[in-house]
Image (cartoon, rainbow over all chains, first blue to last red; front, side):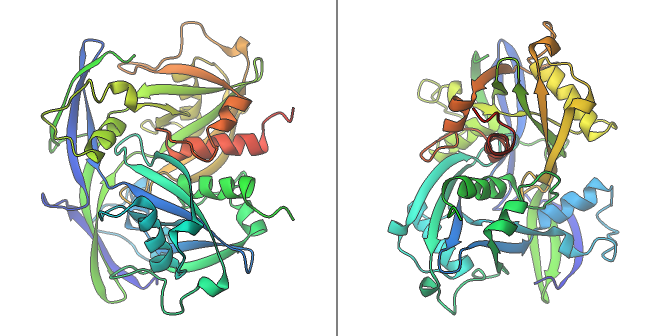
Length: 211
Length: 211
């Protein structure tokens, strides 16, 4: 998945369908204020536990945003990225199965589709449990994310499915409970988002088998 | 804090110091791809536990991004916001004490300043413990956030401090452990970000007093 070359970047075209920035104005206690924002889609995220093998199912993928976060933190300019020093593997993240809500179907149906498309498990919505809704960001975008939980078995697996659709390149990985628990230990430095860490710890606290 | 009026929004000026959108290009497995991104600052976030009163210390504030997320989810257009139907209180979030890294001082010093400026507790860096580093977002911005933990006492409180600096309007709130634990229960719908939920659950799992 990591055969990535020729990284560069430039201005955002005005017609980007994904990133729609704008300035928000308001008056608070008589004082005019503004805040620069971004419109992003609401989304779903699913903690998947394979009960046949007692493994958590996560996804890994190259994330341009994380790559940029790493190089810009070091002050690297857009036109001169040393890909030996900054190999794309640095920005391969581990995440929960997830997806944006970009179709007029229910949130749980979106979750069902993502479990199939990204991880290859075909389960009905009745086996998907809604856990918590929160805002995926509060600084620049306030989109809602719904966290779900699903237990799957090896028998739910469709051999030809998983890994994403269209242009997506997604690796499915499995973690046993002990390995997964270590990811929330003090001292961890991880490219995952906080929603991954919360979903994982919520599972370990509330749903993980006790032995 | 919620005396908020005259909400409207418009295009992002090209010189925004906060939101710097751009298009990122790369080639993956021989295929040219692009991803639209945003440069945001790295940040810190601090779980604060007042051991004198056995209370967690959180902050509340009006978040334009969350307000926009709520109204745009309902299809409300920028020029005609019904503030009776959508009162600003809907977008007052509960979060961990936090701040962006916008000064050339160490990350833990930034954390120390935020604990003082937002919550009014004056403690040395030796009493602030680094927990985990993760990426605060992986879709549109890949900035790093460092999660810290600090125990404070009533004696650390500076009467004149807290509530933010400059234009910030921040309320400090306290939660006992039982109230806080409920926020991570199944069925919660909250305007907080996942980093809040993770920091809270990490504390409950690893640092909360056991009785």
